[in-house]
Amino acid sequence: MTGLSSHMRATLALGLPLIGGMLAQIAIQVTDTVMMGWYGVPELAAVALGGSYFHVVLILGMGFGLAVMPMVAAAAGNDDRRQVRRITRMGLWIALIFSALAMPLFIWSGQILRALGQTEEVATMAQTYLRIAGWGIAPAVVMTVLRSHLSALEHARVVLWAVLGGAIANAAMNWVLIFGNLGAPELGIAGAAIASIGTQTVIALALALHAGLHRDLKQDTLFARFWRPDWEAFGQVFRLGWPIALTLLSESGLFMATLVMMGWIGPNPLAAHGIAIQICSVTFMVHIGLSQAATVRAGRAFGKGDVDNLRLAALAALILSGAMVALTIAGFVLFPDFLIGLFLDPADPLRPEILAIGASLLMVAALFQLADAGQVMALGLLRGVQDTRVPMVYALIAYWVLGLPAAYVIGFPLGYGAPGIWAGLVVGLAFAAALMMTRFWRGPARRPALATPA
Image 1 (cartoon, rainbow, N blue to C red):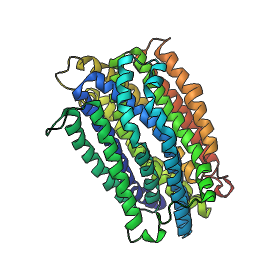
Image 2: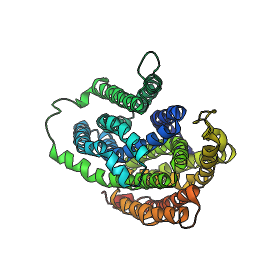
Image 3: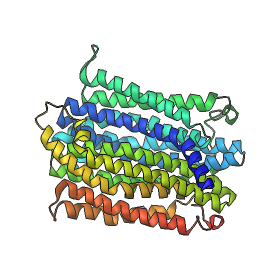
Image 4: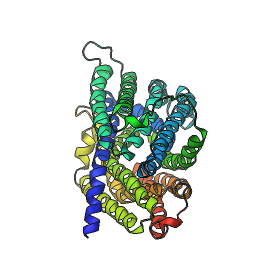
């Protein structure tokens, strides 16, 4: 138990700043949702849809950024600072190239959303949001690369403070630009989009300054001769990153598909779905932070071929994640109306209906907390041992072959509506968790030296 306790302390020491940074990041999205809920229900539905659309695009770029983390951790463990620089620099190259290629998806988002069955009003308002917010994709993806770089080098605290400062700035900009306070024009949805761009840019700049100027990191000369290509390192990041990107996209796409299905039911279920997703996202950030800590710690043990410490690092992370699952389930079951009500104007005549729908969704969300946490922790451990391609296949099967059809069948032909759609999420997430956990514990956790990097 002593070894396990020390691993839990080490995981918390690394994971707490990462968790804080992830919570601060999601606080930006929650702030947008809360303030748009106060502004109006149709606008809330549009921003919920637009924000999910933006996240689906962002998630592709994030895959390459997350690939930087285990690669930089391994290089730093070998004291190869040149490789640290090469990997991160080419990660930034991929981020910028991806951002340029992604812009048409935001410019023509209205046509895409209408083709997906969204109403004219919601699609038009979501397009207004996305045509502005889309310009934030570059700083958002760059931020992911720099966050991975700094976390792998155990500079996670600066990530926490940068994102926390960004969350505070975002709330202030939203208050001014959405509602027209302090003499500013009332911009509504457009104001929320502008605030998001400003927030992402400020955070990315703060992380870049720390990475380039901190006394312990200046030796990496991360931005010196940045324009020079390094195609070997570019290929290394791309090969590890694209399966991560597709894995993330398959999960995020499943949630986006359920959002589209909610739009088929009506704007009120769509608004309730947006609120419930934001609440679940807050708790999920704890598991994301622990998963990233697990990636770094598993990666170092894997690099040394130390199966005992690999197992202990994994077990410590899973115990911490399980404790959070228990707390979350209790909160969702005991206080659903309170949690949903935080996002709604008490005087809104639609409040009772949205409260009822949202509370029913949180009941289902309590069921999939364990499955959702299990799959993200398994993914973090598998990334630590640089195993990304087979988990990608597992994710595609679990989310799209099982999860999405289950959401449709339970929600529509079986007539369970919004809670039925969410029940389909449980099916996909549980199956993914089972497959990925089995792969880790029966593979690299038994014989790390034989694991095949992807």
